[in-house]
Length: 608
Ligand code: F6R
Image (tube, rainbow, N blue to C red; front, side, top):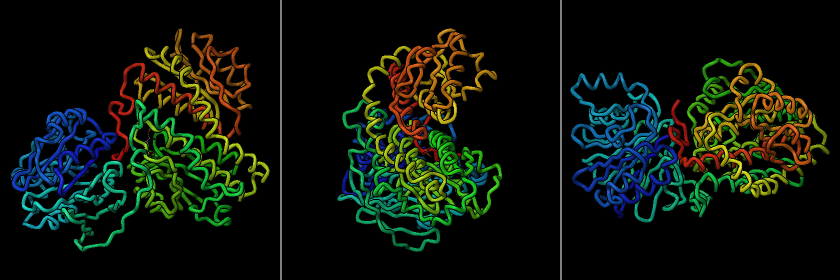
């Protein structure tokens, strides 16, 4: 949700900034801008639309000479996407330039105060308040002005700031929005996320809440909110630069779909030793695991959908009651949390504002917390009591695929571990499940081999108005994900329904030819599912079925069938999701949609 970058060093800043923004465009892409300082004047260029518009307008940055600069790619919150509302924002004297990711919650109050002091606003953004507030407090010492600004501003921010009076410095500060810094051979950088600077360095400083960083050409200094200098150690990033590149694939989404066998393997392998499940990072004694009386799984979007799947797995295997909650609901509903409660938060980015807020709410109430997180060093990873990383590597496409798949794996492993310790399943059953888990990467590979067939089928539906996904139990959980995947990238209206619920209202939407994708992988629910399929088919629906290999009986009730390989009943979502991801992808491609950057969305949702 908005990406910021900054550079100061021996190279021309603008090309470095454009390069960094290119890697951050997944965070927002309705406008972009640069502010570059040539030692005398700060020049700003902004453009509504994708980064390429800004790139062309500045001739690849050539029009903005200078060795220090900040850049921004925007996902609009306050004020429509426009040149005027694009960042960077200036104070009136054009001596302070600011880029911002986050939301200044008290901006209206601050704006009013500043207006009474004669400040004039030119944009509708909350960010402009920061530029003027810094101007108001600036008496020659940037650090002092930043600290004062921090005391007045409420909300979330990662800010990159340049002061015309201080040509040798670039400042950045964060609260509740991600920010990293790094040192390259030619200078120093800040960014919202690692891919933006990975080309220049693997040693990354994660800036914590209310920390300030001052960059010069030669070094970085870190300060706390009281202006005291602090020491920070860099973290070495293990991924390869190519992990954040398209590597010959047409889209990041397709590449990431294809990376799923590896991502699953990387998440699974370190936690299975000699056939036993070992989750070292869990840091819970057997006694503590036995004492869990209730689990809350809290997340947003697709991560929430993995929670819906995990509920069935935890309850089925470990016999622990699980409540799955949307983070944006959980945080405001005063949930009942007591001693025996474990809160599991699931997040790819580790920065999702609602998930982070829900975590903080639970922590404030003394509940044990565990994060299932992909981005190392992210806010959620740092703030949960314990973190179990999913090893999906960088996920760039806005629609999640490989992170989703690894989240499922982490949840299966946890449920199995809890079941083992609590004695609710036998060792033989665990052994069998471990064997099934190990087969999943290969089985995903097999399903990916059906891509052409799924593409041909998807091409028939590019003009569809509505598409429904139905399932029961775990198949309902995967229907939620299949439906989201399709609608978010193809803009076709879609809903997921518990199959038995359809006739309580929604079935009235079924018309001649409406596509209904039925997922039926749960043996004990086959018959019920087939009845539900027949119900919609007799009303004109065209039926796509995703089911287990060998279940040919389904062909009587379906018009088109995709078979998934046999696995343990708790793991079928890991396989059924593959054709559904491919289906969504190919429908969107067929319609000519920008699948990696769907309209109105951004990858990391750092606002409420
Ligand atoms: C959908 C998608 C989103 C995210 C959601 C949570 O494809 O990617 O629904 O799952 O925004 O994001 P994280 O996992 O970063 O907390």
